[in-house]
Image (cartoon, rainbow, N blue to C red; front, side):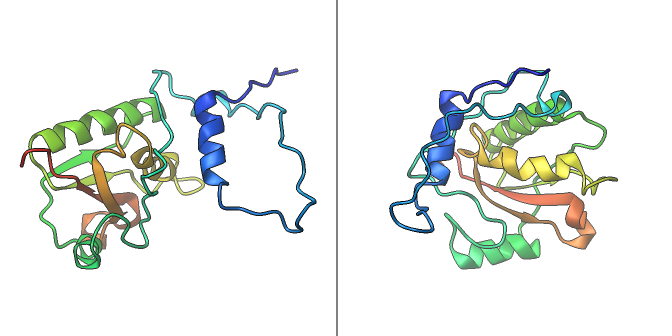
Length: 176
C-alpha cells in the first residue's frame, strides 16, 4: 500500500489562497478543515530535477489566457492576434516534463535578459489527453520564477502552431 504524503507549507498556503473567497453553501454548516494528507501525484508527473514552485504572492493576480490581467486590453488583443513580433522561440517537443520545466524557466529568464518582449513557446498538441506539456506549460507560467517574468500569455495563431503553442509576453527588464 502506498503511503500518502502531507501537504507542504507552500501547497497549504496556495490552497488557502485559492479558496479565500469561497463560502459554504449553507452558513454555519462548513465542514471542519481537512487534515488528511493529499494523495501524491503519479511518479511520472514529478520532475526529476527539483524545481521550487512558490505560490503567487497575495498581490499578484493569476494569469488568464482568455482576458487581460496586468495588461491593458489593447496590448492583450495585440498578443492574442499575434501582432507582436516574435523575438525568440522555444520548442519543447520530445522533452520530459522535468526537462521542459527547467528549459522553460531558463529560456524565459534569458529572453527577458536579452530584452525580448514576445516569445513563442511550442508545446505540441499531444497525442493523448491533449498533451502533457501543453497542459503543464500554462501552470508553469503561473509559478515562480516564471510568474515574475511573464506579463500575459495567449494561444498562438494557426500559422505559429495554434493549440500547440503559446505567445508569452514578457515584462520589461527593470531599468529599461
